[in-house]
Length: 327
Image (cartoon, rainbow, N blue to C red; front, side):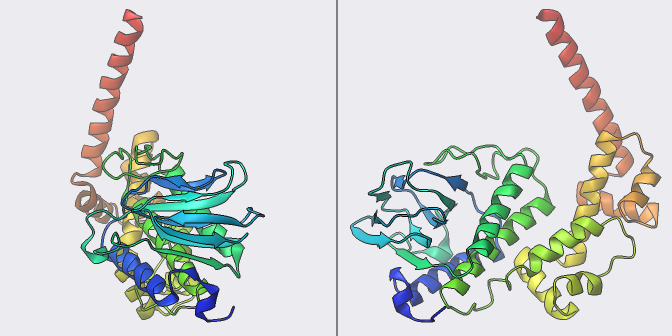
């Protein structure tokens, strides 16, 4: 793909890269932001003003159409990707059933790193050289939100896929980091497609995602170590450790411990296995070490957690019986 400004329609390439890098730095150093909508849609743009930014890709839109962002009007071509702020709203001159695209909206309200993004309409559209890679990144974000059982947040868009940490009842650290990595990967692809080098906030496409998935498949192996994880991600141990830590805020091995303890909690809740058996199944050689790590991440020992689960189950069973009686 040619590396020139004419490939971008609307906001110039440098401004586009500046804002996307700032968004990446904000996400990289903080928590996962609120996501009013993430998923596939077949409706046109009819979004009222809201403190969000939008990333989208109209892979299956086979017609050219106009897009209005505040007082700015641009032409969006079939197969274009889009980045814009939604502070001025956006509308398209296309019927609702003619547009099919992937969308991601990020709530950027009260973010010091993005001060000024609300002052003028920002919009960038660009052709995509590798649509499959971009679609995979959008799908990854959607899949993680569905897998997490996230509650729908009532933002300016009421999509089937949304994320609000304040409403989340069963969120956990590994899924939060996976969602964070997936968003950063999407930003990296946008920058790559625009012909812009990353300044470092965005991880090389796929590296952290591959490592997270690798750990998810191999956490039960007590012999799993950093060099093997880094090799799976295609990086040296030192380089990968720095990349992962910068993005996730914890080391790869700390992340691995989170996965193991989360799996252990699930087994305690939903199986009749003994604590010592669970310890071995999730990758700990020493049950005492497992107990110490469990306590440090859960605030209680495995046995205390098991007792809490048992007591809560009894309460739920009694409440269910009472409900059946009154019905």
